[in-house]
Image (cartoon, rainbow, N blue to C red; front, side, top):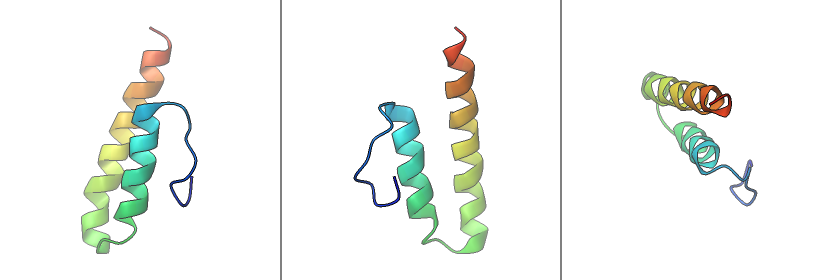
Length: 51
């Protein structure tokens, strides 16, 4: 999903991938918060698979 034209089929994961693509345009210091937020969402999504 480099160009945003593909979908994983999971809305939360797709949103994270879009956010990460957008984060690439930010200053390095600002990217950290985006990466941490993405990590949190992906952890929660994976944890939810077992529920």
